[in-house]
Length: 419
Image 1 (cartoon, helix red, strand yellow):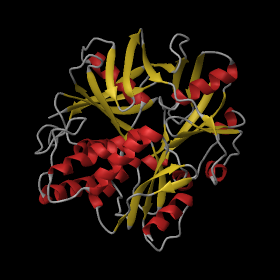
Image 2: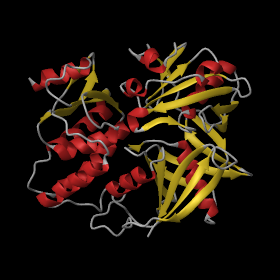
Image 3: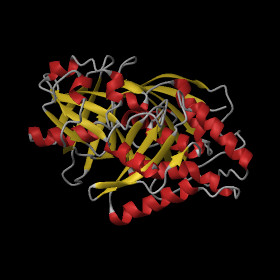
Image 4: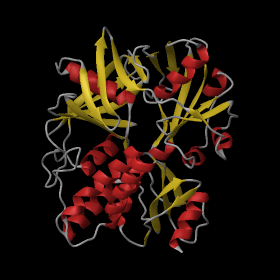
């Protein structure tokens, strides 16, 4: 039976900061099992660390919200390193992740995360953003995390936010970072991500990969103190190393508040297990594919099968959907939905290349079954190659009911492809 640890990150006292569950595993595990465990803990993130042999990393690290696997999570990375230290594993802690190799080093009572900086580029405020937040943005940008960075007038405006979560979930972004100049800290922020199952995250390390370069330029300094002004609250230190442009150091403390044994079928006890590359998992028959789909749908809380869906490529002012699905192919649908945090209804989602890679990896075990042609898997791989060669932006469209009106230009292009 696997053991778990619950760690409060970015705080030096319990019942503050951001809690994350951490499992340190010795063997491969099924994606559906990990997603089910994350849903059971129902914390903003559950981290799964697994020992690997490699020249650059010692552990594979993955992060799951209650609804979806994500590309980057700071507080759960801090919690994982803190857990390994508590287990007697010497640092530095080198993790292979969806966002590349991440290293965490200990310095006194602080852990320092070495993350890629994800600066925001200024954009026009999306329709409905101000109304959803309940505040007027001073500046809006989109960071490399696919989060919107929203500067507000002052710290009081950030602290007073009471956003409309349903409206915010419809905004095209992983989450929304609200920020302002601080009074007792250099900067303050809050982070809302209802679209991936996190109405408000207590302290968000990944958001500070966007905040650090933004405020460093504004304030003319490369060392900053930050406070995330959630109900629990948390403190971070930020450094942009001059000798390593494009990186940010995020420092914080952590406290273990619980540990125990998970009383359910272990990660390696199931009939099908998979490593990060999916190579160990194979669905060779129709029955295995049906069972895999049923497990994935059951683990994706609130999931409703779409009437139609597809992934398009936006380039040169237009969006092309080379493959559309109507009334079927529900295994690729739920894998795509889980990857993007989509649950039900009609919606469009911007996709990163990392998310497309994750969807491909999630569907790849089905290729072992010769009874199907696997058109989505082949199309997704073709899209991946085309984006790598020629560029472009990916967008996924889900239609809950074909009678629904198109929600935006991408949905309209998708409906035209259906016709």
